[in-house]
Image 1 (tube, rainbow over the protein chains, first blue to last red):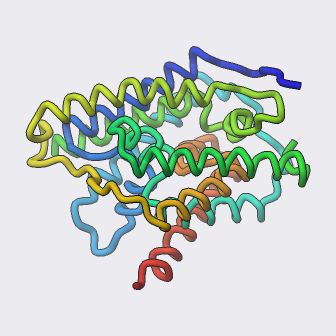
Image 2 (cartoon, each protein chain N blue to C red):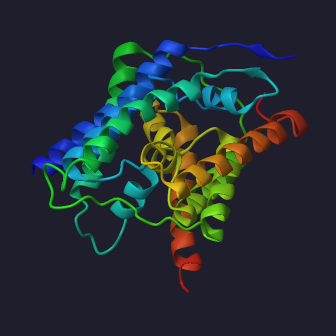
Length: 146
Length: 138
């Protein structure tokens, strides 16, 4: 039973290219990697060093996403009944994992792979595979969120 | 000042990209990760589109001595694979696979004004700070 549903190729490609453009600009102009977890972690660093650009990048992230939702409206239904505690566990693991592994989907998955970084290619392969297995367990064995 | 403005613009484009591609919808992300369900390949195209454009940035970097607004590139140079990289990627994968949120979409989705991304982001920051306090002591 292999079925494809909800596939939105054009908006996915367009959105992806916007993300890539953001990464390109940040690298070519500022020499920085557009890794969200790294930018967030360094923005929270004390004492504050050269972090104004990081806070402005994060502000821009909210403005861009919020602006689109405000203009175009929400194109999907909010899921209901996902356990709060499980979401907190998920966030906690993502927080530990991204600091420990030095990156997330953007830092390793987009920026790192675009530089053909060996560490990023391996990290992305690992978190993709683990995420696929985890989703299977959560949805089809534990029966949560389906 | 121009570096800060550029960062703001890049952030807006990034957030726009996450919203346009619907990556702020955790079920869209899980639709990709759930290969046993009604599979949605969209996330692959998001990554592919992002990579194709970001790679142009890499080529420009390789052909220049320094970025336009700064004196040097701040790009990780490490090449070795270590247990922290693999362990971190594994924990991240578990968290991502549970909730369907990674850091960018989690932050961006807060603008919807929905409780889920707020819980995710607070827990994300707690996890990150606790690893900084406990895990990086040695």
